[in-house]
Length: 632
Image (cartoon, rainbow, N blue to C red; front, side):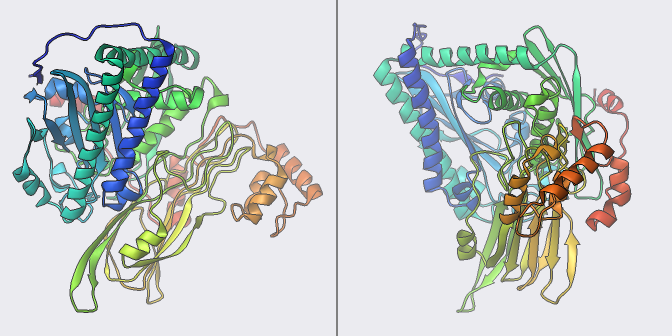
């Protein structure tokens, strides 16, 4: 039963003509309100993941729930169709269960607040924000158990409930929720920050409507949606062919020893509409790497990618959704059946952007990006820290790391940057002040970016010295299947994690591990993957390679991938470079559009020698078609 909107004033909004100046003012005021939501969050949240890194996503929508400004696209339309309750002035909705909102939030760590905005008895907008909570209970600190086989192991699941009802706060509900988490102080502060951010945006919407008039404001939002529709229609016609193209990539493993897991998508255009079909994607995993991909969220991913590659000036919103049809097989890795575990969905989420690049670039290679969005590396560190008076404090770190961004048509990929443009790193000074650890190295990993005319971004080499006994967990990917290069560019380097014990022993640890005991004095080398390269490495300016040697981004040995002979000081030997490039050019064949590196069989055969880790075992399922029939 769909939600029932209670509006004392039933007068419909009137559509009016909007002049370009007014539209521009309202558009930029909405952009500013969205930025103010982020600023409010940063000033009031407590957890490092939200306060320092910005792991939260706002939106402002029209009265029908279509996102006007935001980041992940709107879930509100789907929510309204499934929420069996009323929406009234003074209400605020709170939820975290992905299965209760068709994957609009994709794991239970994301707490979402939804505020309907009423003015003079009419619903005029929604504001919403969700943010990643550092702990929501469950079987492990951080609430993202790698070994989970169901969502019940991943912490508290909150269905859509009213945290505020007709202006009254549900304090008992909050006591119940906060009782489930290991960090109630962080979670309460972060939730209050989400609420405050939504209220700030609601005030700005009311101010705009009061300044310009309700009909003008709502009509302006509809024109922004229509403008986006026109722009995306043109981009789709330019970049998407009627002939189907397919692309596939892999999540390396599931943390239980099985992998890789394939994600496959086929894309084609029918008239003005683009079809994106994930048939051929592997079935859901028994571990937590499943990603419950909401169709509208993927439409927004597609739109963001199109806009950022082809026309970054476009304000992306939900106006183009009817131009895209998304097909995701039930029971697959991207639409798992309840109660499949979802907490480790980050790897698949990142891989979706690599796949979009591979699809869209086949028709227009000049716009093609290499791989490197790939994942969002996580480190968890928890335990008891002793005070001088003999008491102990529980500490718990959740930190998002960065990898190498892919080489691009317009230049090199950024070194050690986030998949999400708005994310920032946790300052080392913050880590050392609030947690029992010391950062002994924080630098890019030389040569990890794939060679190319435009180099892939280097990964990060971060070394932690633990100062208290505890446990760590690591969530990362791209350690088995490397990030591919394009247009002749080389693949990026793979991720590695090395633990140096205080007793002098050294061990290579996996990229998906949990409950690893560490002692005071142990060192963890947390090394992330590099982005793939773009274009022929032999076309790169040798002096640029020499400069990067002086900057510590490339080594003299790594320079040979560009056909450059150079000394440790970055001085290029021009004659030797010309000879080496001629030799490489003569011995290689035609440059591939995609350079995946060795195939899966070769990667598996050489895995232990190259990575120090055993190769993942290929999962075996029944035919997915048979699984669908059995479910029906």
